[in-house]
Amino acid sequence: MTANTKRETVLVTSATGKTGRRVAKLLAEQGTRVRAGSRKAAAPDTAGAGSAGVVETVLDWEDPSTWGPALNGVDAAFVAFYPDLAVPGAADAMREFGRAARENGVRRLVLLCGRGEPQAEAAEDALRECGVDLTLVRAAFFTQNFDEGLLAEGVRHGAIPMPAGQTTEPFIDADDIAEVAVAALTRDGYAGRTLELTGPRLLTFGEVATELTRASGREVRYVNLSEAEFREMLPTVGLSEEEAGWLAGVFTMLLDGHNSFTTDTVREVLGREPKDFTEYAREAAATGVWAV
Image 1 (cartoon, rainbow, N blue to C red):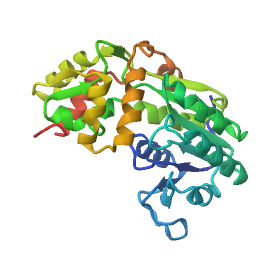
Image 2: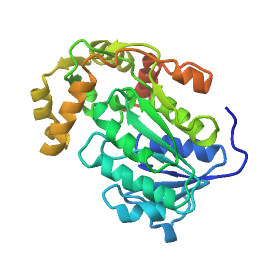
Image 3: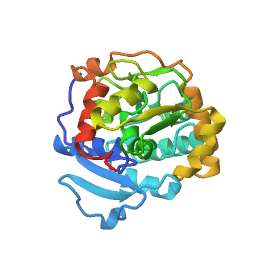
Image 4: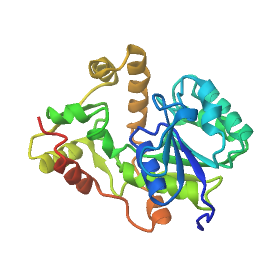
């Protein structure tokens, strides 16, 4: 795949999230102008530079009036919809966002998607309707969920409660996702493709707990929950009842075994193996994130 030689401007949506901030950083490091979109950023006409090559702009997924101004003048966009492409209304949002992208002359879109998530396909199709070149980046379960996301607090207190049974999952590092997304944003040859990303091996959540125990030096247990038990737990970590309902259903579906296989897409795009969970756990533990 060939890289573009023109210095382009790329909008990164959800730029403070696990993947978005990594995508923005990598783009800026390679000299791309980055417009970092988030709900609480400075307004586009008053935005100041953050890190070199990065300008903040307001892009609130709950306020479509912010989408056009954020897209105006950009060549490409990394689209990470919040809270999830499987939620009710996501397809309508993607259709409207795609329309705004086309009207503002955007030439390339890269959409971050859940892997093996049938409910999200309607949103993918809705974005595709705009006719702008589109690449889907479908990612497995993020390793960073254990230190930056939903499960971090549980790990700190020695437990991973999930409705997964003995299902295996090919956990993927967000650094690898971001690097693949940047390739799709800045190189030719990925338009119309679906890039399905996984880590290098399959692990059960019990095996993940063992890895985290070894890396952190503290016991971490996997606690297998039913879907109902998981739904009841989620409000205790800050989710609303509505969010808990759909998220419990999505996780139960994603962890039913249909995603229990690996792909070689990271190697194909980046020319190297994806990061192994053992390496991720060792690096995360060294930051002290799981210290109590």
